[in-house]
Length: 101
Image (cartoon, rainbow, N blue to C red):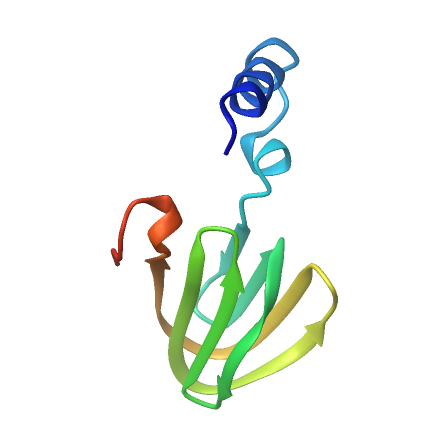
C-alpha cells in the first residue's frame, strides 16, 4: 500500500473509528459452530470440493477443510458455506510478508 494511502487509512480507522476490515478491504469471516461459514470481501473461488474449498481474498488464500461442504450462496463479495467444517487456514500472499499459515 502506498505510504500516503496507508496514513489516510490509519487516520480513518483511528479518528472516525471505522472498522479496519472496511478501510483495508480485509476479509470478514464468521463461523457459526462448525457447520456454517460466512465470508465477506472475498475475491473469487479457487477450489471447490466437498472436503476442500479455497477462496482468494486480499491477504492471500483462505483454505477451508471439512466434510460434506456445500456453497449455499455465492455473490461478488460474499460466500456462504455449510457442512462439517474442520479447519480454516490463512495462506498469506508474498505482498503481505511471505507464506504463512
